Length: 100
Image 1: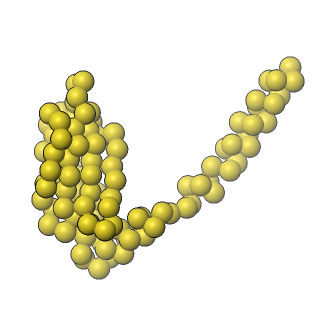
Image 2: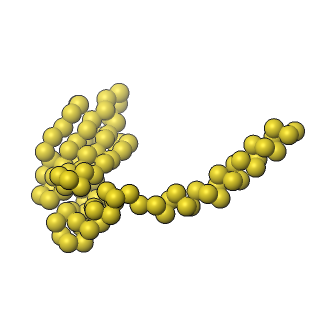
Image 3: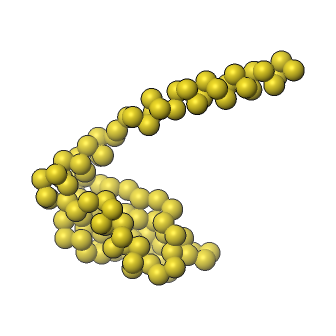
């Protein structure tokens, strides 16, 4: 009974603190936002759509943005394969791919 109460209390505490973490932005997100506002970088949604269209039947399972280069990296899963697609955020072009 004590263990059940402890687990319930921890679950409640975890949900109460979750919004605090959701509000935190990383420096990369701030740099991306600034680049999109200035017109130097294409928006994430547009780049994601371009990458998705290049991986027919793939499901996106992750993404990254490198503010130093302005490159996006999208990670897809298709069947049993993982595919990484690198995109130039300035031009919108695919610049690299790993996997099939």
